[in-house]
Picture 1 (cartoon, helix red, strand yellow):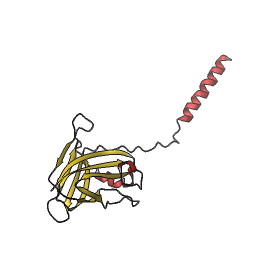
Picture 2 (cartoon, helix red, strand yellow):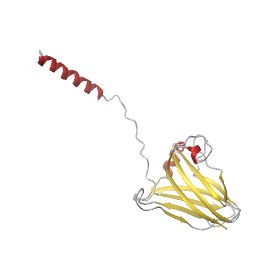
Picture 3 (cartoon, rainbow, N blue to C red):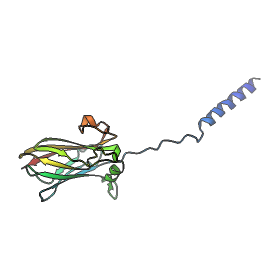
Picture 4 (spheres, helix red, strand yellow):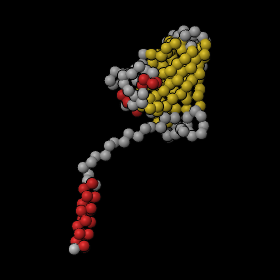
Length: 184
């Protein structure tokens, strides 16, 4: 009798295990975040002239080295610039263009621009598929000559619509860089 109870218990347990392993459950698709090592911001003066390139490259990711930040020149006072942002992963061969993924998943991303000093406004952003700000392209106005700072932050899964501030956008940061700029 003990053997029969033991055998029935083992069969019941095996049945439960087999039922819980059915293939009826579809696993959720995992959307792995891309590695972003480089952000390039191009600022082209509306009045004509040479574009200014702001670049942040962090080729070791979360490694011990700080990102390399470069600014190719100074901005002109009281001017408007058309801006665009691209993202890439330089650890891949060939270099991977992450901007394409941001564009494809535009409702899940937003760029935020925090500026101080001689930058008076950043505005006129491109939009996502729902008509909310995306920010891969934008306009930037300078004020009088002086020093300025521009922080560009790519947020993932932001709250949309929002007020455009870092706290109002929410979500998590995919990439962030700050640039010291001279306006002359």
